[in-house]
Amino acid sequence: MQFNISCFSSRKMANSSDRNNENTKYDARNGVNQHKLDTESMDRQVLTGDLSIEIGNDLLLDRPMMKASCLSEWTRRRVVLTKHSVYICEEGKNEICDAIPLHEICDVIKRDYIAGMKLVDLGESVRNWSDATSWNWSDQGSSKYFPFELQTEAEGYNAGRSYYFGVESEPIRKELISALENHIAIAKWRKEVESSSTFKLFRSRCRQVYASGRLQGFVAILILGNFVANVIQSEMLPDPDSIEDNAFKTVDLFFTAVFALELCVNLFANWFWPFFSDGWCLFDLLVVSVSLVSTGVVNVPGISVLRLMRAFRVLRLFARLASLRQIVNALTASMLPVSNAFLIMFLVIAIYAILGVSFFSSEDDVHFGRFFRSVLSLFKVTTEDNWTELARGVFRDPSSLDAGAVVFFVSFHLVVSWTVLQVVVAVLIDNFTGASERERHAQRLALAAEAKITSVAGPLDAMLAALAHFNTSADLRNRIAALFK
Image (cartoon, rainbow, N blue to C red; front, side):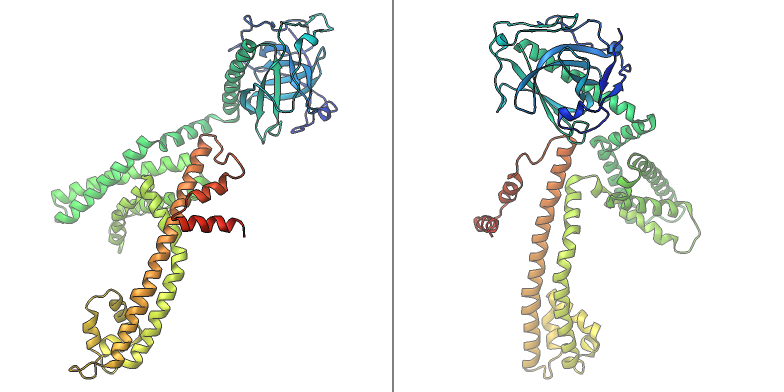
């Protein structure tokens, strides 16, 4: 059976009347003869007349339906379903008014009522097709249609437009929706296969396997095993070239080879930007590269220092365990704001260090003879490590109190240890909490994107989410008040 349909080459035109002005030829001869829609149980049979459309075995359904127009009216249309697209034609004609690629349909939704649309009495809509096939939309004793909706992708050919169709009975609607969902899934899979080469499919499969929980858990066990081996080796300190030393070298060589293989798989699966934009992947690259260099190069001065990097392999565990990774990422994100508080504390200590050199360099040259000696001594005071003995060492008369020294050390202790240092801790906790929340929110967004769901369903959801994460009732009141500023 041969057919030729005209369709439009323009993309993303929401108004169907504009589409009728630009027609090109469309040839839909590609496809496989599988999953053909069975319509024998329907009241309306698949059209098998002699049409001027060449689609071969791609034809799945050709029947009249009601379609919602842009004027909030229902009009009769001819709907042709193939293995690649849904075509909408005027009744009795072969010209396509609109086309919907199956792989760009997001969802098929049953609608019991569509706001703003009039219900059509099918009894008043008896109409025969004018061509030889003589389609007949007859009155089946029903007083309303049964609508359903096709939602399209926002970045696709139809620019996120929704299409509403109506059929004459619930069984037909149910079977149509089921068949559409089936063929949409097949079309999406076919599109993915066609757009991806064998190499890309293999790399995508490697990415899925590498990111799986089982493989990451196995790698985490290997990292822990390597760390335990390093601990035992450091505890035993075997003699060079002894049996124990050779055994530990063999174990280290095994772990180095396994980690190098794991790094190669990671590079292949996430090449290029996904790998080099991830800080944890770069850390893996550094540690494994240094391990390979220290293993392959011998009798080179300073190579023993590189072998110390083996102890840092355990830090790669953070990238495999989500809870540890979240803590490290939160700490890293909070370092920049905390650095401002650290700068304030250092400036206060530097001021007191200069005063200490001026006041006490003659009494205690060891601790206050130079600026950096004074800074180190004052840092010892902040740790409260026997700082009273340090203070007594600058007394001019050890048998009595020195008022100047007492005021200096007590004021320093109150300003730095009790005030500024506590501010640093408070800033760290506040930024760590905020960074942790942002990290969890980013993980939720990633999971939502992976599951292809929208994390924000309404315009107020972002604001409600911000209000929901309050600490105290006073914090909630402040957040609400901030909305009206």
